[in-house]
Structures are given as structure tokens and as C-alpha cells.
Image 1 (tube, chains in turn orange, purple):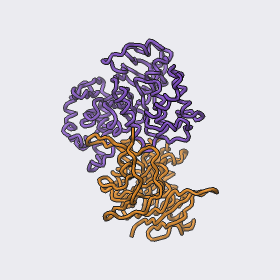
Image 2 (cartoon, rainbow over the protein chains, first blue to last red):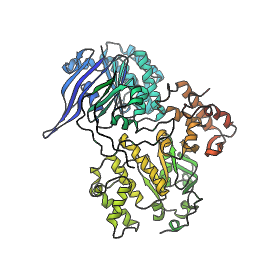
Image 3 (cartoon, rainbow over the protein chains, first blue to last red):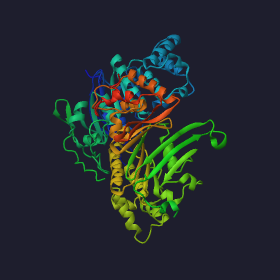
Image 4 (cartoon, each protein chain N blue to C red):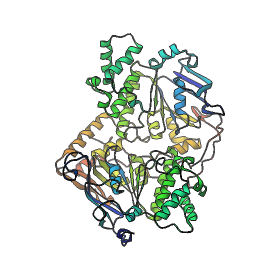
Length: 301
Length: 339
């Protein structure tokens, strides 16, 4: 059974005059130990999906259709008490600006202890010891437990947040642009950290980013989103070598490679819009593509 | 117009030359030469006519400070900025002349903040044309030509900035720069705030301006892959110093400085099997610390044919250091080739 199964998920941002679909009949599943990437540009709906899965959407956003099942349980059916239990323990999320989500006037150790004690019956002393182990797990010295967030670098803070997310050994970790604000070397370290943790703890990952190079390096399978719809879903190697949808190709063409011959890329012309994207069709085993798709104009620059 | 603008153009002199430029923030003593933060240290850099030079480094390396000094938005502590062999820091002590500003123009990172929201695109461009005395009767037509030269339809002339996408706005910012027909464009992370799919278009536009108009570009970025894509030459900045430079492909194929190797190895590369490991990274960090703290640093030639040099400790055998990477093909990762 998949850890997560999302079926025809539709999220609408509703106002008096009109409603906008932030996510439109989105379907995908994630197996245990798998890293699934959702890629797309700002506003494509990838974060909307993540927030819907966590049931974190706020008005005026509403889930108006579809289902989300975690381990076979209906997430949309959970009441507040069940949700509180389920979040963090079963599924944890690291946000884009997570490193600024730490409490600035609280020691790192106390924040980790609070997280642990909010979900488990555990003594303060034991929790403090566990917190030290968690820091060690993300390669930060346990004596940093007594540090305040401002005494750590941005990369260290982000690692603390990841340690916190892994504290209760969740089955699914959602990472929403976890390295966007970080320098490239730190970014690589964080991703490596996630890979190691994932190997060790065997959780599933929903990885969200606009950076296709990163996405290809980390993910097992990738879904490409535009205008609230998934237009292509396939194993990472297939997306890299055999992308079929014109938008996927445009997105791939937006990232110049760091190796190989230097060739001219074209990206996406200004003002190209994708509307009325049809349902995905399986063109090869495990490779789903939305048929048609607006033809991409060649960039004139 | 100042003497600078009218100086004869000699194809042999670079468009712009920076010599021994240093900048210290928050120092004390005469001219702030004691204490504080050394943001730039003894920077030498020449940008040829019709050449794109990428200035790469991490946040805090000093790359934006260098661009801002050249744009005369910051006053360097020491050094020279030469246009046609004339040091403008001496001839224009109290700030850049209009002549200098016309020839050296800056494109900023944020296209949302750099255009006046109350003015239509045409008014923005028209103002620049008139300010620099190149207005005239056909100003509407000239504005239209400008927006078309950056790949936009002339219909955008009547739009307000908020009606345009980030990519369109950045093109307008470039059109405004082109209005004064500059020799040098300083582009500080011009695509990092744009949607990813339109970034390449802006890079292609800069590349076309170099090819068609011979404009020199200093492209400031943290993105090595885009530097490789766009630039003829790359210079790498680390803690305020230029530590390595050379033709883009040659430099990235065999980076000689440990800092460059660290950066190159950290760029995600789907073509590479397996990322470099933490041990390789730590080894490089140790090397970087040793190189940076060495008492005597000197520019060494790595490969004269490709103008490739590295700032190495005086007692260091550059060729021995570069050889592990040199054995790598252009598609290989220099990090993986570490012994």
C-alpha cells in the first residue's frame, strides 16, 4: 500500500465574485521510502497541494474535491484531535523559510525538547538526551543544544529544523523548497543529509522545488505542475531523457547544465499560458502525460 | 558631456579596467583603513569590448559590492576604475559624471522595485532619452524600437509596470539601460527574482546585445551553470578577493582553486552519477583555509591559451594541484577526481 494516495485533489480559492483553482484534479501516490518531486513555477499549485495534504489550508482556500489517503486512512475525514496526533508524528513538513521559524529567544535544545514532549510521554532529561542525538544525526555537535538560533548559520538552522521534523520518525516528510535561500554548497549538504536520513529512517518524501537540476538529482519520480494541473508524471530519468509535454521540456530547457557541450536554450516565451489541461494518459509504463498541450513558441530573444 | 564620453575609442583597450580596488566597511582611522570588514581586497579585472564576464561567488563574497563600486554607488577605499585609460576615481572624485553613467549602466536584481509604478513604460523610457539629450521629435518611435529590441511588443509602451510580468519588467529595465547606448552593462543577479522559465530569455537577450552591439557585460551571479551558459570568461570571488579566472569552459573543466572546485562540485548535475561526499568537501575546506591564510599569494598562469589563472600561495606548486582535475573530462566532476 502506498503511504500517501492523492486522488483528484481540487483546491479552490473562493471569493464572492469568482473562484480560482489552485490545484485541479491532482492525483499521485508515494510509496514507502520513495522521493516524489513536484516541480513547477511560482503559482503552479505545488505548495497548495502540500498544504492541502497537511490540512493546513486557510480561508479562502478550500478543498472542494478529491481524496487524500494516508496509510489507507482518509485525511480529509480526520477531526482536530486526530489531526494534531497525525501531524508531526506521521507526517512532518519543512517549509521554505523554515530556518526563520525557530523561536529566536529559545535555546535550540529546549525547542527540540518541547517538540518531543508535545507528542511523547518522556522525561525532560530523556528528551534532552534525545535532542542531542537528533542534532548529532544532522551532524551538529550536541553542545549546540544550548545555542540560540542566531548563533547558528542559516544552513545549521535549516538542519535543526530537519532534525525536528525527523524527531518522531514520521512516515512522510514534506519538503517545500527546503534549500532555496541557501548557498549552493550548503544546499548540497542539506540534500545529502536528507538522503542519508531517508536511507536510515526509510520515510517517504514529497519534495517541492522550482529547480529542475535539484529535483532530478534528489527525486525518484517527478510530477510537473502548471496552472494547478499535473501535466507529466514519470521516473526522474524519464523526465530527464524523454520528457513529452511541451511545458516539461520548456522547464528542463530553463536550466543550463554544468557539464557537457554548451548549447543554446530557449526556455518559455513570455506570456505562454496553459489552460484546460486534459487528464493524464499513460504513454509507457509509469510515464503519464497530459495529451496535447499548447505549442511552445520559440523564444525570440 | 564630460571628457570621458568624448575620449577616442581604441579597440585594444578594454571597455573597463579595475585596478587594485579595495573596499572596507566600517573601518576607523584615516579613510577608514583600520579595522572594519574588508569587502574587496586588491581586485584587478578588465572587461573587453563585447565581452561577457561572469563574477561568481557565494553570498557575502563581495561580488555585489564590486558591481556597486563600478556603478559608483559605493566609494572604494583604494584602487582605480579606468574607462579609456582614465581613472574616474581621480577625475570624478565626488561621484560619477553623467558621461560615466551613460557609458556604464546597471541592471538590478529586483525588476519590481526598479521601475516607477506611477509611470507608464513609455514615460519611463522617454525620460531617460530626454535626460541624456537624445530625445527629439521621434521619441515615441524610438521608445517603440527600444522595447522591440528587448523582445517585447510595442503595445507594452502604454502599460504600467504592475501590469507586466517579472520577465517583462526586467526587459523594460534593460531597454531603459539601452536607451543611453552604454558600453558596459553591470547586471547584478538580473534573473534571480524571475520565474525560472523566462530566465534563459533574459540571458539570451544579454548575449544578443553583446553580439549585435558589442556591449560589455559584467554578469554578477551565484549560479555557476548560468555563468557557464552566458559568459565568455568567469572570475571567482572568495572573501573579497578574485581567486581564479579564465575562459568559462576551460575554467570549469579544470578549476584550480579549491574554492572553485568546492563550488563546481556543489552544482546539481543530473548527468553525474552520485554527488561528491562530505569527506571530499571537508578536504577542500581545509585546502581553502590553507590557501586563504597563506602569507604570500600570487596570480599564477594555469593555462595561458585560455587566459586561465589562479591566486595561489607563493610556495604552492600550481600544476601539481591542478593535475587531478586536469585529468577529468569536461563532463566529469572535479570533486570526484580528488585523490
